[in-house]
Image (cartoon, rainbow, N blue to C red; front, top):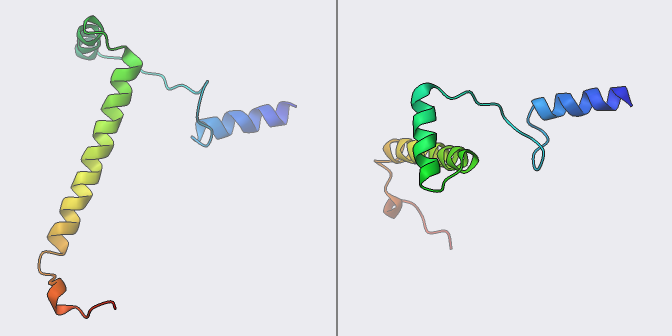
Length: 85
């Protein structure tokens, strides 16, 4: 049983287990605490604020990749490619 618990803990630390009960520690700076307090006044709890922030970071990452793809393919002309059918 102890081996299973150790494996479960290791898997959770590695991010392989998600869902209810998993958590991440966060120690906000004074500025981050001020932001969270202001959001709380607007009815947004800290967990939701962090989730929204993570989604925004993921969207920013996706946009950066899309821009890099567009720059890489800027000279591509699909009219020069043969039709697929």
